[in-house]
Image 1 (cartoon, rainbow, N blue to C red):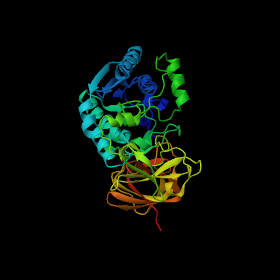
Image 2: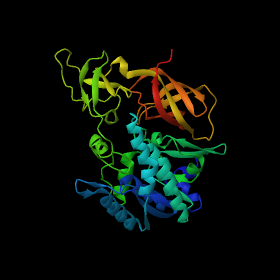
Image 3: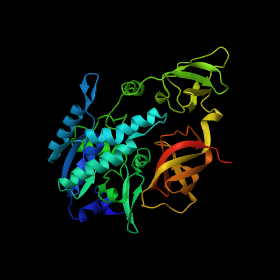
Image 4: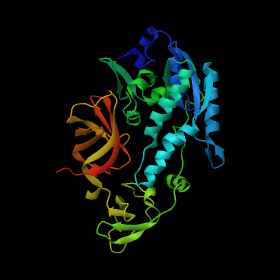
Length: 377
């Protein structure tokens, strides 16, 4: 493995010291990333990004608390901390697309776009202006060079691997990026933080929308999207209730449908199996494994290949259609920036707006945005 792929490794000490700016969020992962780089002898600085202005949750300013934790870590490590506000870029490049996808009835994944546009573009550009040679983050992933190209590898900790969210990165971004946690497992990261006396060692992992944080998703969307009520129908056309708007539901969803048990049906729970945006109808069926929830393939667009060019078609590889899913064998037919994917086994809840990400031999090849489920003949 390229020593630059893991500055925590002893081999990193043989590399010339680099000036590296670490994205610190106030969490344990970025704290340990900074710790390992400093221990490896690099000239480490940190940058705290604020990318959402309206971050007051129930009267508590989450960003202020995270900043205080970041300041404590940097003071403990003796490294300078810079601050930057990318809220305008986030709203224009990420959040506007997030809302547009919801309006169209899709279920977007803003973390994917946030990584490309904010963490590895706005942050990278800012770090370079500060004089950095490299940037680093607390993501669980690895980078190596092979045949003159940079490859994005899955993390050693399969349960924390974040390559799914990083599949839109390009060669230029990977060339400048280190992932110090790529060879570590999460319990090791917490042990390192505790042993080093970092106050973030027991801090809960952040969840929710990238930079926006933990919100009740439907309530948050109501602030930006109008209600557009319509019928909830069963797959045979029976009207079962009323939905608030297709934007507020996703395929495979069970909770929040408000239709409960019915005298003319069994007690099995209802799940969203399709949306009809023309008729503004939400279509549901009973049972977690109802056949309408499964498809053998999908179509995707805006496909990005990390190597900089598409592989030969057809491509036999594996794919994920959601974070932490086990990689699924498939065949990919490639046509310019779109693909058709045929899986070896049916996949549950293939969701337009989400990402399909391709892998082979532990290497993340790239991915695209799902536009429709398919059932190839």
